[in-house]
Amino acid sequence: MPKISFRGGSAIAFLLFLFVLWELLVRLTKTPMWLLPAPSAILTEAAAGFGDFYGHLLSTIFLALLGLVVGCGIGLLTAIFLYRLPKVNEMLYPLVILSQNIPTIVLAPLLIIWFGFGLLPKLIVISLVCFFPIVVASMDGFRQTAPELKHYLNMAGATDKQIFWKLEFPHALPSIFSGLKISATYSVMGAVISEWLGAKQGIGVYMTLAQSSFRVDRVFVAIFFIMLLSVLLFGVIRMIEKLAVKGRKAGNR
Image (cartoon, rainbow, N blue to C red; front, side, top):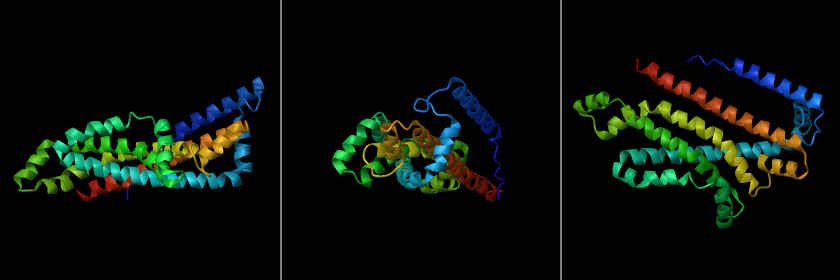
């Protein structure tokens, strides 16, 4: 079992320093709550209103995880398909790149017009956000396999399929997990954006209601929870990466 250590102490210390500085500046300048609330006011609102916020939080977590799984699953399959078929890759890979040039905030209303206000348009938005990082990272990982190792397996009589699954895919695991970590951080924001455009529940809905009532403290509560969810997802995937990659290395010794 690999040792998983947390080395973010300096980052936490710096964040605490920023919060203390923020608190002091707000108090010294007597900034009104509707303009910029102090961290203490944000924490107070988070604790007092968590009962109402809890349902929104669960809705966003469900959307983000579902979109992450679907987007990364399709992205990984697409990367394998394009890498294994070079001629198809020449035709379709530019389209994959172009798909990321469409602004999500523009595409989302069209998806609602086409598919309604249900789960499907939200899932498409989040999946598109998660799709591109995993495709690019996986393709790069497959390409970076050492040529001498591929030549050795060819000399041993291995088929292209065996070379891919026994050598190229395991070799690309660090790159695949890099794409997963990027997609994980994007998935939460993708879920919030999809909720802005039409949902009954979610952090995006909570933010919209808070903005319309000038409750800036609640807006910051939503922002902090979005950041927290992104960091947690990133950390979970990082732990899985350590278990998978280091476990594979230990098994090959």
